[in-house]
Image 1: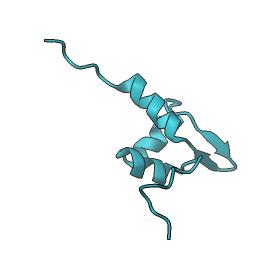
Image 2 (image 1 turned 60 degrees about the vertical axis):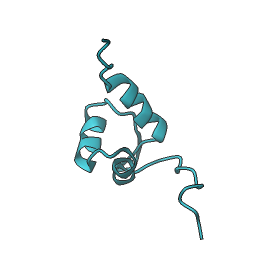
Image 3 (image 1 turned 90 degrees about the vertical axis):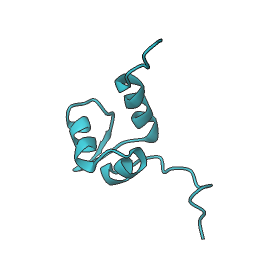
Image 4 (image 1 turned 30 degrees about the vertical axis):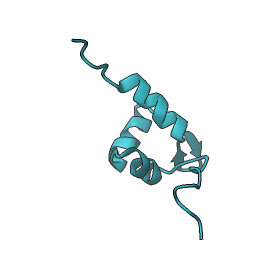
Length: 68
């Protein structure tokens, strides 16, 4: 039996798996792909992304904390 805590993420993620990992909704993941804000690999009719692409999107989209 595989241990989910020690298993690395797969190389490519479906929008459903990307949504589960990121906490975003599946529709939002698909919208980000369609808007080319989230990098993906087209494989036939499917669009696959990576954990690194999710991290890259986060780095571009995050709002820096307020400096007090």
